[in-house]
Image 1: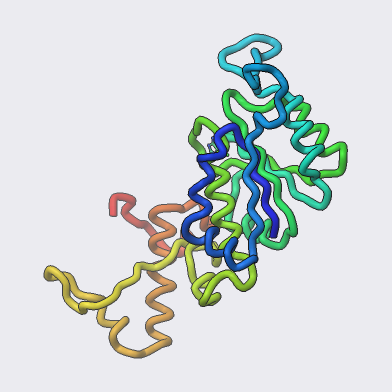
Image 2: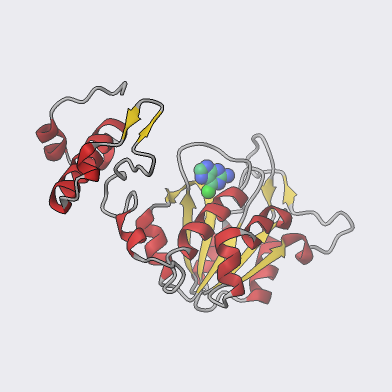
Length: 240
Ligand code: 6GU
């Protein structure tokens, strides 16, 4: 997979040379290219923003540098991702869809966002555009979201994970939060590992894990469960 990231803070994306995406790059699975948006400015101050039409606080990113950047790197066959708090929520299912793509271009905005014509123009030119948010809070720019998106997608690329079954069992893959996990020692500071996990009855272990996953999801993320399933579980104390 090829991923181009455009940002006025390319150093922010350095973290991608470490850890998981770094390994994918060295193995040839990932071709990651980070670009400084200011490459496509022409004035002495390398200006990327201006005041908003219609008034209001903050600055808006000018369309011209984005247009020239897209012309040069090309959007052919790519999904253009635009991180923004006003986007659709980026989920595990989104990561799965994107992991099947050959090319992603991620346009990181700063300030109050990017002139809306940039997305309009890219879509009119045939690009598949997705404006995505990583959660209900506001960040200063798309860079941190881009890091999250790249990491979530790259770890799903075929051949990336040493043990693909660890991908199937984790939180969100089955619509539930993951059950609690334990390792040795069996007793630590007076706290025991649940007996069932040490008993070797794999059916019982599977049932226990499913129950804990359901219970945890009902308590922490009731929005993930259909009402029917929530009702069947009865009351859970949200404090625990
Ligand atoms: Cl993708 N961008 C910004 N600036 N803030 C966010 C976000 C994205 N997702 C949640 N908050």
